[in-house]
Length: 410
Image (cartoon, rainbow, N blue to C red; front, side, top):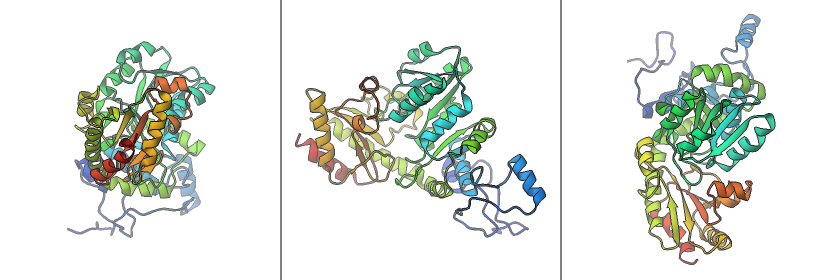
């Protein structure tokens, strides 16, 4: 069979019914007339138009490509690929994960509207909802990640959005997506789920009733700690008619280079996430048996409070992030112990990112959640003795040996 059609163009579109693993490799814009097999990188700010009439039509209708702030082929390919993997009608890319949440609220809400959000979400997410959005009259109540009764009690007539991150960062708490979707829809609100930790490889929130999926593509979607990226996935009407006009105006767009990097990374996402999840389960079991460790937070362990729910929602897998608490007499001793374990490592990376092929160790209370007040940290369960581990692709024994340097000398 010919690789090209009668006009000399590469074959397109793809056949229907392809599976997610195939879509991660093949979905995106059609190749150019040159027929490149690897997606091209379009590093251009503007696009030449064939004539004035065409330019006028394209700028008026915002069709095709005119200016990279409004659309770029490399960014479009990333959006199409991620949407296909999430089972969404469309996706819109942003500069970072936090800017994806900013776009979510700017597109959907106005002064006087109300949000219900888990209090266990990423520290910067709490700050964005509690402080920045509050300045513009959008009010947020923070509730237990796992208690649907608290979510229900926090609902108001003005509630327009429920926002959840599952599993959470760093305590890996899991919420019931289907139950939250039912609650939101019964009140005329939308449910948005941060799927950064699981990715569509392990969890597809839209299939469980969520309306929108948010990603910090900086994490697992890139997977090698190279670029910043974010995205929202959901119904085409919301993406094109609500979010895209806002993005076009405010300009928090994803750069073509970053989009190209993440697009190529999606091709290996399933392999990476599953391998890292296997490694993480092994490390979690080792930590749970260690005498210096008081508790391990990991959905893949039967000891996790939401283990059964996680196995049902996350394709029977716990994911690639865990946290553990060190035994200590008080908060000051706990912090000293955590710093000692972190600083004793020689292999692991001391950094604030996650989802990398390199294992990363972090002290959340002084990094990712360091800007929260002590009351906010306590409410989120972030103690001084908590250490987060985002497990990579190294040999498991090398990871545990590195942790043992500090744990054995506390």
